[in-house]
Length: 69
Image (tube, rainbow, N blue to C red; front, side, top):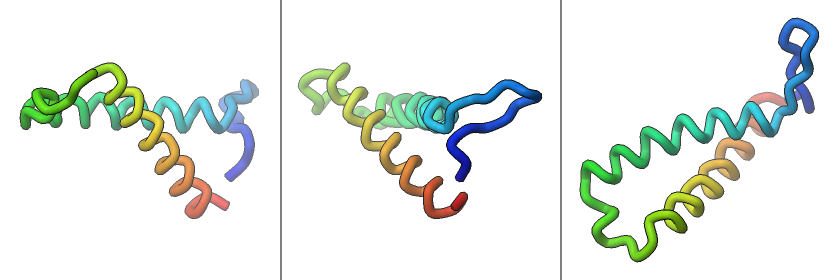
């Protein structure tokens, strides 16, 4: 995967694109977890959401590295 994306002459860093993809995935996952009721078992929702974002960002980055070499 290239280090940058060219969007009509504007270079966008790869990490920014991965972070936006992860943000949309986390928004959907947070709504699903709230609907199921997982947040009643979580001590600190903000820390849980941050940890979820970091883990998913690592997973998306790893998957993108394997598929877009």
